[in-house]
Length: 473
Image 1 (cartoon, rainbow, N blue to C red):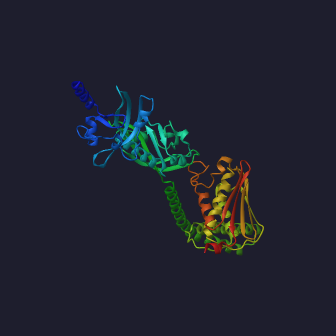
Image 2 (cartoon, one colour; image 1 turned 180 degrees about the vertical axis):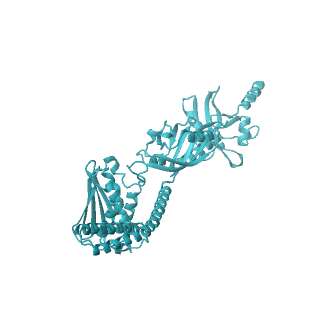
Image 3 (spheres, rainbow, N blue to C red; image 1 turned 90 degrees about the vertical axis):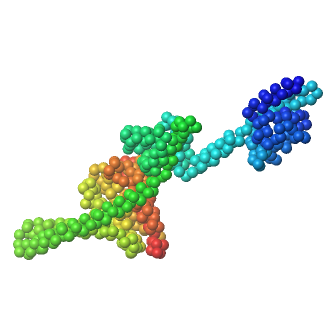
């Protein structure tokens, strides 16, 4: 019998998990080498060791429940007090054994501390990824998306259900060729990190500029099993760059216009002087009529150049009393110079005498020109008209600009004014004109409203407060 007990102890010591034999009173009768190592127990039990004394205060105590039940097997999770104050998380496999006079429990305790630690790390990581403001996507080794965080859904406009299982090119702008992506894949499949700036497309077709870091996910064997793509939205930065480029372009235009005014102005003055001299020396009525026509065209060219210089001159951003009717007329004259405006008629009607408003003159002119040019574009080369009506009430001045062009579809109507959104072909519009215009009007405490019917035309209504001077001081 002693030999059998000795052999039993040898076998129980070979088990890699902690093992215990526990009496009906929950007293530990025997344990193996692994239990001695992890819990700091003596080689043989000295005195009574209650099983619950091996557990932390907050641990559940499942042994009594097993004794009281008819179930021969049960699993439970507990926390052991290890030596040096550490805690061991373990899952118990408990088997009830009927002895000659009483019952015993054979308990195997598997250490899951490392698993719990990894689960906790994974939970922390998943929470960080899930709730970060940066769009995150995770793909498998083949490049199919297996996870996207809420920020990715919000930024792209796609739902999680629409993205999971899809290739990331579902949001691609198609601006990058096969050679570009081949280089990206060649790098990340080797376990290296790729970083760069990408232009993608949202669900509604608008551009999405992000700085992307693609990191390989490597398993314990060093094999790449997936990829994590972290995006940082740089759309606002791109917008600021576009505004800066536009500002520099306007500055260059002003310099060019000033040069044209100087080079063309002198010959025009000479032509005007010669025409006046000839007019005084001839008596032929037909010739006088034609010379008068020449003189009027010279004056027209002079005014066009002067308006161009005034419009292109850099803004000083200072508020000053502004007659918006005069600014409207000047904006119409500038827009008329465009070739595509040749078949467009402009009608200005002022129902009430507009008071002077405290505005930045060249900024309000820029707004008028942007809207008028959009109206001209809406004609698509056909004959058309743009009606401009100015009126006021007790607190506001309203400027309604109505064209009878192609109008705006309902699906595009709600996106008009968003930065970089345009229905014009590539190279014919940046999508910034109306966005900048809305910003200018709102800086004057005003508002821009839009009504449009596809195939019938569009009306932009600019509303400016009469007391804008006081509110902008």
